[in-house]
Length: 135
Image (cartoon, rainbow, N blue to C red; front, side, top):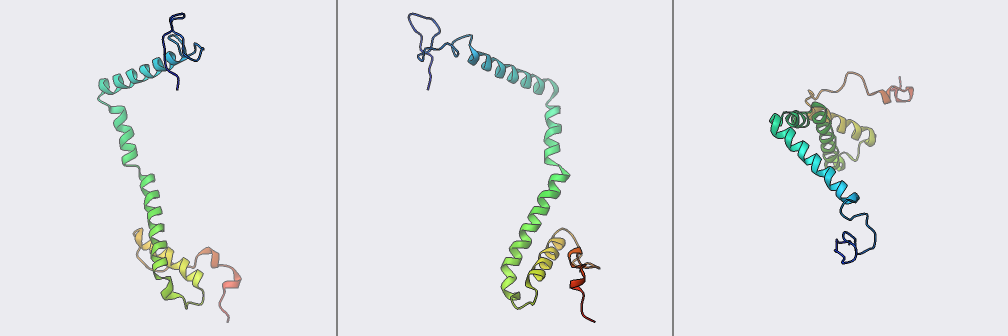
């Protein structure tokens, strides 16, 4: 740690021998920049009633995209937790991975405000001819 130690020989020197942090050096310039920044921000907030900051705060607090994203992440997480809690009861299902994916998607759809009905067509990954039922 470097500290300002006045010297009897050279006024404004450091105990390390360099004069970059001495008065008038780059450390004072950095402090001056921060002082100007604080001054400008305080003048902006007090002079305009913080109206610019209120708009920013409202954008963060009532952001629809952020709300949709967090709701989606929360729904997916809860769907996985529900499947983990109930997967042992369905261990005898012949296509357990597909059944689990459908369970999680249905749980997510219902948690997102859906009606709980199965989709009218299967998901696109099952449109392949190998998923057709035999005649």
